[in-house]
Length: 488
Image (cartoon, rainbow, N blue to C red):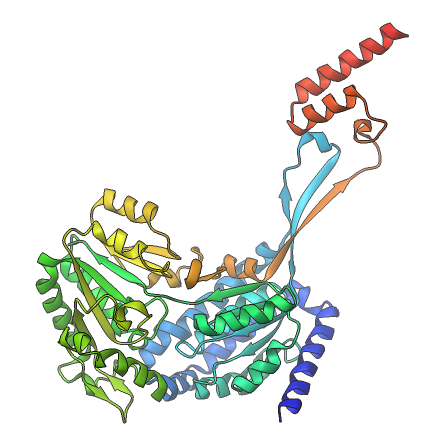
């Protein structure tokens, strides 16, 4: 069985490489046609996409559009509008010492690209990187997550009807398929998922020195410094924690830091907005996604089984194994050495951690691995500067949550254990491109001091040239010529 899978994957990569060599994907016409086709796919299949997302994750159609369909549409349209400008050569300033010369930077596609998408946003995390890859002129293999089977099947069946089937291919399957995929040579690997699998991706890529972009996650904190609009801040926290795939998102708030004196008021407001958004009986809410599968359900339930963690629950905690549902849950000061505070939660559990002074939150964050995002609700300009300058994270967002992910003019990516590399908008194009340096010179003027036999004159000439001291160069040559004349 594995031999057959290996042969199929090898043939797929070989066919893509041959097609890439034809140069068809390099033209602006091909790239624009693929982006237009992708927009048509979204417009003509919105209901089918929503249905697949509901089957896999229980996402409401509005949540599906907000977090996946709309984002893909926006990204594709932006790339379509800008791709011709992005791929145009850019003039580079060349120092006078190289005269006569001109330089330019020419973006070129990397070649055969492998994209792993994640199960929590199985449409957005598949199509958004594809947009960057085809905008840059690459051929692509997309490996959807087998944990979102309805969306994986949708992509495998629908993409060949819209995108160039010779250039974009879908490979479905589980671990056996991944093993065969890792044996192939790729020109770029783009991975969204867990650090555990990312280490396997890195090991595979290292064999062929393949460049990798890793979009991972981590424990993203939110700092609550009694902002100017207390209620609006809490409203945004509730929406960001539980309203996006029930907290199963790499940029979801993982834990909340607040001064102890504000914690009671904060928790009561959290409860109020939870009831407003999801109703009094959250088990029956249509606005909350379910947990992806039994494995992750058990993982999350086990986080709450620690007696000291269970004792810290101040709201929620109910579970429904049959429907893979876990009630939005708030915990107040669970043990910091418990798994819920050492591992990424990736679910609807929110620890609220109290500090004496909110400035202590910086030290708290710095004592843990670098997160993908930091959120801070504060009106204190000095505190904002301290957060930016004294912490390290993929991004920092003040007085809001998650919206940085949708802003194409800002790069999205992690640092340290939360990943590396970046994408979105022009940054996606750059991620899937090599910016080739091109220097044009002429066979006329020559700089003789670059050649032997060596002399003191040539050494001084080279010193002045490297320092771009043009006045000194002219003076040095004039004095040298005058010396030669006197010698003659």
